[in-house]
Length: 449
Image 1 (cartoon, rainbow, N blue to C red):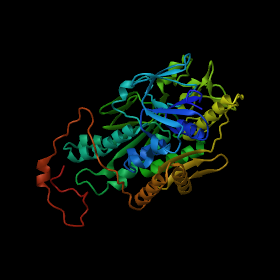
Image 2 (image 1 turned 45 degrees about the vertical axis):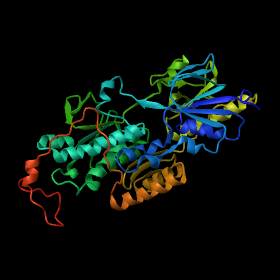
Image 3 (image 1 turned 180 degrees about the horizontal axis):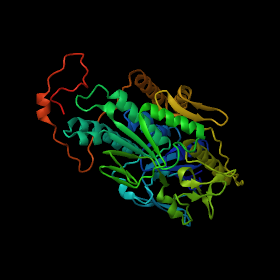
Image 4 (image 1 turned 90 degrees about the vertical axis):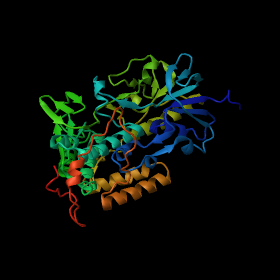
């Protein structure tokens, strides 16, 4: 059978949904073209660990070509789709040219959403890609360095203030880890700035953090955050974000580091389909995950909106994997002249980690918190990492962090656009006397500000 006789399936996006769809075709007589703007698959649930210096990029990412190296019916293209023409079954590529398809699976995911205030993006970066994670890591670590070099106590305090906007899993994980970094990891490494005095504020516009979890677990999550030293402010929508901090109505929080974890919007690629979208830009799909009016187009993951048994399918990794597998199976049925069936989502529960020995887990009839939930979270994330090397490296790094509180990936690389380094207070440094070996390095000399 030559290539013209073999059905061509194009998959846009190499995340959980796209990758699981491609793998489902491993024994089928189809041609698959997988297109992604990056050359790697990213394990997004652990992205915050890269942002907070707990893991390195290769620990949670693997090249798509390597993952699919044994699947001879897959061609991987590192490119971006600029448009879709369903009537002619063509997609346009950003690098130029077009590509025809017999069946199309759109799994291009989501991006940050600032609720119409896109000007906040430069002051409050979000976390969706490895580039985002490395930029956030740079901001966090640089803030402590700026505090050490700062002469003015008020400006130093602003450098040691951190605000996380959004009380979902990403916001909770970032805030909890920031508290551990300040209270433990960096505790004895600075001479004038005291990291243990850092103020970490988690801001949530709703009435509680982790609102998708049952209220008792949400309350336990808040208590665990507060035990770590995180200030949790709920019912407090952000009204302004700038380079110097945020505003919550009349309240002002001065902070040089603000992180966004409050909202996402679907990939703009859905607009190319010429169908009505929901408020988040997602594509309403039929029960079999096809786009009404476009029988050869399937939409999955964060780009799709669908309710099963009256409940919306959540935008989480397990749902994306299940949708990817289902879409591939439905294409297989269509190729064989069979009818399609509706997607059934299997909810295995929700997990969120807060810090060392601190997590919550909703497994339906079973609800866990504290150490047991943290161990369960650890096991599940190790289990679902792709590749033996990733599992082994992450396990070693977590074991090391547990026993030592140290984070090995604390290297600052690159600079922010337009960033300038402040002059250090060299006079104060010259006046400081050397502490004897074994002295508390956080103790200030009389000359130090």
